[in-house]
Amino acid sequence: MKKKLLLINPWIYDFTAYDLWSKPLGLLYLASFLRKYGFSVQYIDCLEKEDNAPASRKYGSGPYRREIIEKPEILNHVPRHYARYGISENAFLEQLLQHKQAGAVLVTSIMTYWYPGVQRVVELVREHLPGVPVILGGIYASLLPQHAQKTVKPDYLITGPGEIKALRLLSELTGFKNDSIPLPLSLDDYPYPAFDLIKNPEYLIIMTERGCPYDCSFCAQKKIAMPYTRREPAKVVQEFKDRYKSFRLRDFAFYDDALFIAKEKHIQPILEELIRSYLPLRLHSPNGLFAKHVDKELAQLMYKSNFKTIRISFETSNEARRKDMYSKVSNDDMIRAVGYLTEAGYRPKDLEAYVLMGLPGQDLSEVIASIVFVHSLGVRVSLASFSPIHGTREFDKAVQAGLISADIDPLLTNKSIFPLSGPHFSYESFRKIRTFTQTLNEAALRGLSLFTDTLIGADVRRIVGQIASE
Ligand code: B12
Ligand code: SF4
Image (cartoon, rainbow, N blue to C red; front, side):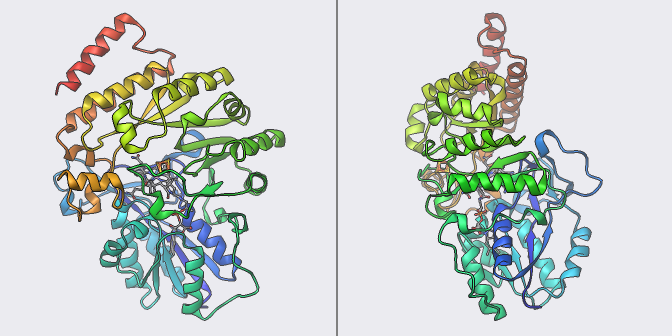
């Protein structure tokens, strides 16, 4: 009985959320790992699709079920609806009540500003499964352990990579131990994430390494992941083959932080082997890719291996800020990468680039200049709103500049609202920038760059001037 574990992926509470190949990969790794050591694992996914959900959009990505709820008081000033994304509370309770025999409940956490969903799950577990120990882990728990202890009140909280720590804790709690299987010595000794727990999966996630050797000022990976470690390319390819065989799914999203690092030893052999395997896969990288590593050879391999979703981290065209952020890309890198990718067979409109918006001290003209630069290459712009993450240099800078307090409620760091807290962005300019970007992206999709045609260009420049002078 004690060996029975219940794993839960909580709801998202936010102004907006979209399933962009989002799965709780950490929890699924934990599930397969604990199974390997003899535990039996049950799963509740608050973000699972309901049976009557609308069909997914492109390559399995799509919207979640959304229920508008009351805003936490601290967000009352935000003139937007706040929602719980995922299954209804009743549907959750129906599932929860089937697990009264669980020996422990393991709850994951992702974005720090999604903690209300985690809190609610734990409240309901306490109410309906009294006495069952609750273990919390994941990204929020790792970045803000004290906040999580106080707010979510788990019995146990584990920070960082959780497999071995959870196994040790569960062995202590349940008295169940399986010493016959040695602990993993490398990443390839970990079993594949337990995707069989996902109801009707439409895509799969793959992670070919953990961590990242870089240290960008806005990023928290060093506080969450293990030191940068790669898997063997042959083992990664085997995972693709095995997964395709078991699930018959074509879409795979990479969750790597730094997929193109050491490309000759890593991603290139992986893609070469995938091409040789003739598997009908479609590859996606919702995480930003490094432009500077894209050369002729890699671009061709990407094209031949059917790499469909290519999002390049561009961040900003402002040189001084790039240096400050320890950014990995320059305008020239970007131009070169787009050149190689188009030579390989992509159209510029097949590519997207992340532009960061709302960094402390960043004004509208810098964002617009970055958007315009990306668009001038014919590439679509993906606007990423800045969200200061506790424990990063960018967070500390914002505290020192008096923009936020060190103990800011994570809810106020939400990417949908944080850029609005500074002097440079208003709701109106935020909305206009989004519309402006959408317009440019629509033009890019038609193969037009509005900044190369002098007539349309003049109009656009006037609008840009208007937005920037607000
Ligand atoms: C993949 C990814 C995404 C994916 C989807 C993620 C998802 N699951 O939904 C995409 C591309 C969509 C995405 C988007 C964004 N992301 Co993101 N993303 C990541 C990334 C690179 C990997 C997460 C991951 O799955 N790792 C792999 C697994 C194996 O690791 P893990 O989750 O940490 O799990 C381990 C442990 O945490 C632990 N564990 C996990 N659960 C549990 C449970 C228990 C009980 C226990 C004991 C242990 C445990 O054990 C696991 C195995 O070792 C992280 C960076 C990172 N290195 O973690 C950023 C990260 C999570 N993202 C981040 C950000 C900022 C964003 C964006 C806001 C960016 C933007 N401005 O648009 C968006 C917004 C998303 C939204 N809807 O609001 C931040 C988090 C910020 C925060 N405030 O919390 C991170 C940390 C990156 C950063 N910049 O520092 N992201
Ligand atoms: S932003 Fe990307 S490259 Fe920079 S430290 Fe984070 S994971 Fe590494």
